[in-house]
Image 1 (cartoon, rainbow, N blue to C red):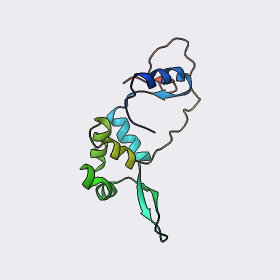
Image 2 (image 1 turned 90 degrees about the horizontal axis):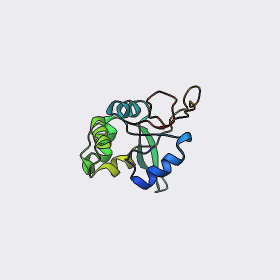
Image 3 (image 1 turned 60 degrees about the vertical axis):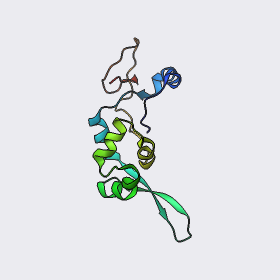
Length: 130
């Protein structure tokens, strides 16, 4: 998963593949729920051989403060949510710190729409709006 507002050219590409994907703006409550349920941190852990390898660690305030607290000023999950919702100078560092997650399929699949209408019903594909 990626969190960023798409500029105009990629948005046209998104509209071309609209029947196969869901995209749109996320609300703060959705971001909070996603991070609490599926949020993991990407933390580099060095092994005995001297190489460092990213490891998937459950997201909590201690992990955030120890790994990106000094460089970004984020010390808790709420700070990470605020940085994702209002991208600032530390957005890239926070986004790279989060482990990507896959969303599960919609129960029953996507519904077929004949008209291009923005809808917020579960199962509709395309732009979910705000």
